[in-house]
Amino acid sequence: MKTPFTRTPLLIRAALGTALLAAAAHATPPEGSPYTVPQPAFFGQVRPRTELDHKALSDTSANKSLLSTHVRTRLGFVATPSLNVEIKVEFQDTRVFGTEPGSAAAPHTASTGNLKGLDLLQGYVAVQEGPIKTVLGRQKMQLGGGRFLSTLEWAPYSRAFDGVSANWSMESGDLTAFSYLVADSTNSTTGTAQTKPATEDRLLLSGIYYNRKINDMLTAEAGLFHDQSRLLTVYSGDSSTRYDLVTASERVLGKFNIFAFEEEFLYQTGKMHHKVSRDVAAWQLAVRAGIVLPKLKANVGVDAMSGDDDQTDHDYNTYRANFYFSHAYFGWMDYFVANPRYGVVDYRADVDALVWKGETRTASFKGQYHYFTPQNAPSNADKPYGQEVDAELHLGLYPKSNIVIGAGMFLPGDGAYKLAGAVAKLTSAAQNTSPAYFFYFMPTFNF
Image (cartoon, rainbow, N blue to C red; front, side):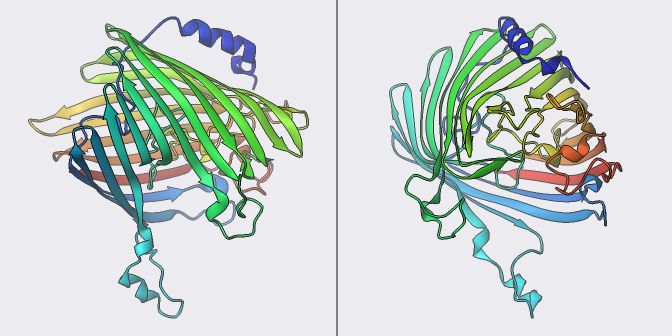
């Protein structure tokens, strides 16, 4: 099914025109970053999550459901040895219940514990000089709506980077710059082409991001990023031995009376090489429009990431979303952990309603509907991926806690077999068209 989103030049003109219109939120430091204030002196979290996951689409033989429970535990502290210096250390342990290693002959020995589940989530030193704060070490970073760079808090392990960043906080604007070493093969002893040690085999991510509060109704943001890899990678079925990608972004968001609006556009260019060098020209677009009432928020919109309908030429048009929000369960399920080769257009609607509020306790409902189609596919493969319906009940029963009861269902379309979640051998003739569904219970407690 061809859509208006198969015409890239028209889409770019529309996005740039829309950027002149709308938006409101305060210009603040990046959420979840070392520049979020205030930083508590001592903090922690315990988040168990139980899931019943039935992905019929990707299993045409047994179609068995997966029932599992994992728990994420965090403990950290912030020390300020002087007015200008801040040190943050945060540890994290994430484990799936019943998966601690034990001997083959005596599986009960798994109950003795395993220290390998413990990791350093954050560890950095920050120095403040005037309005500029510089951070060196392992740190989180999320920019804008998280469509290019996100902390990925939904995932069990979250996302953190090793490197340096700096933030300049101004009266009505905020500027953040960073340079991260994402992957380096020099610490590997394996012999595969992807990981064997080599002096320059690494992945680097650098960028600069600016957000400015124009007035009480309008905020504008812009960013420029360089994603460079010298490691063998496979993305949406396309492999590369190296790539250099430059991504430029703009975002506006606002609120006018009860009406809210958000628009974000990212354009990706550069080179990707595997046997031959390919020119990259790809994009991502997100548009939202809705209403904001005291007890209700509702939006309709479109998310789109460009695809490539011809893998035989020297052009590459699939948008590469390496560090984005990756809602693997809520909104995108497991099928969109990587953007499909033919891209995706997500026609969506969502609602967030406060259904009950007591003196100290609340209950709210969040729901989403998605209709997924390829963005740019050959005529013989241009069929919808499917539809998805998601619902969550959020219970605020205790201080610094959120209890979530969620459910989702994916209804495969005729093109669902092309998604990354489907097994490689699955064909359009052999695909399972039964609904896929999941349920989860996730209480989060912080201190």
